[in-house]
Image (cartoon, rainbow, N blue to C red; front, side, top):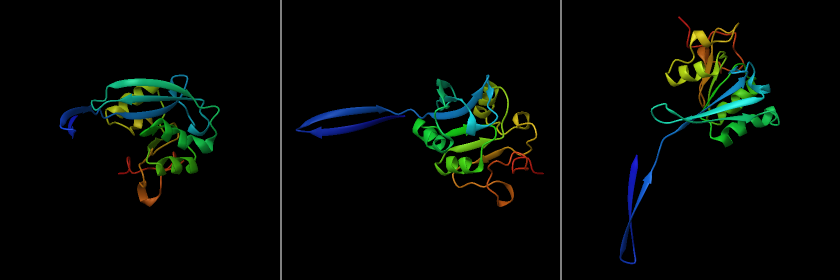
Length: 165
C-alpha cells in the first residue's frame, strides 16, 4: 500500500510517501533439514519472512542452544514471529507462546521446505505432516482452544478439531 500525507509548515507544502509492505514471519525448529521433534530443546530455528503473495523474502537460521526454555517464547516475540510450526512442545511453553499472540501449529513432522510450502498453501495441519503417533495436530492462536473445549498443548496423541468426523 502506498500512503500519502501532506504537511504544511511555514507556508511550504511537503508530500511524504510511505511504502508499507505487509510481511509475515514463520518460525520452524530445524534438525537435519527436518522439523525438530521437540521445540523446547531444539538447537536451530529457521525464520522465514514472506510477503502478501507468500513469496519468501528472507530466511535466517538462529542458534537456540543458549536460550533457556523459559525465554524461548519471548525470543520468538522479539524476532517478530507470527507463527510457529513445530513438533512436540511442552504445555507451559505452548500456552506462553500463544498468550503472546503467536499462532502455534504443533505435532508437525517432515521436511522443512515441504512443511513451509504446505503452510503457505493453507494446508497445515495436514495428515501427511502429523508426527508419528500424533493424531490431532494442534493449532491455537491467541485465546483459542482445541476440540472439546481443551487448549491444545502437548496433545499430539489426542484427536483435534481438524480431524474429527
